[in-house]
Length: 262
Image 1 (tube, one colour):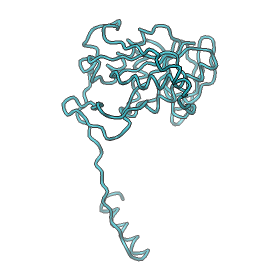
Image 2: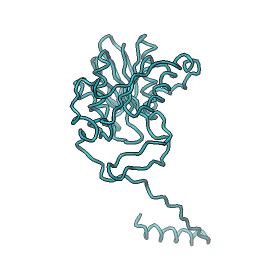
Image 3: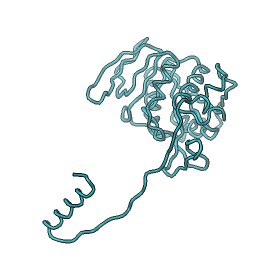
Image 4: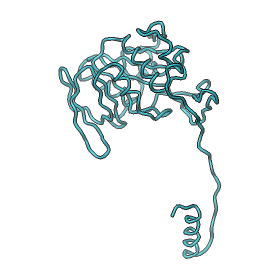
């Protein structure tokens, strides 16, 4: 089985500035890490590799420094990894991001299953996985919480639909997005770090894509624009009341009414 795992480098801190003109995050100089949800996607792929003697390719889109998360994925046990990186990809919304990644997948070509994390911690849209599948014209299932069985030409999965649990069988090639907790992600291996220290990480730009029309990528290819992003206001003010139980209850009740919580 040939598996592609889509991973993303996200800020490792909540203290990230926003470009006031484009509304996108300014990532330069900010510590980054693998999107936590993508660790569950990686572990799912590694479990399936162990069961099927398959091959795993990790794909990410971002600046060249995104090679750090590919290196970490190598240390966890993937076989190949590459980066989609081009200034023309910058500022993409979920649609343009999904389209660029779909073009990257077409560059890999040979795959049975694509695995994505449920969502990213910097966007929280949970849209890229399903949109990627639509661009590739393959079936997809989201919110997968359990892999039940791998068959010769399909995968049987259990989906968490909030109020119900559903079981779906999907034909290959297909895409799934996985919930956190589907497996416990393993730690990177120091042995694999040494083995893959000089392993090549190809970087593909627009010239490598099947569709080279610039208007489909980055800001140009984004039908939605962020109007405003701002951090939540921090409020550390506090009030300390003294008195009997009855007095404190009355003060708390009055305060809740003042704040219109009751």
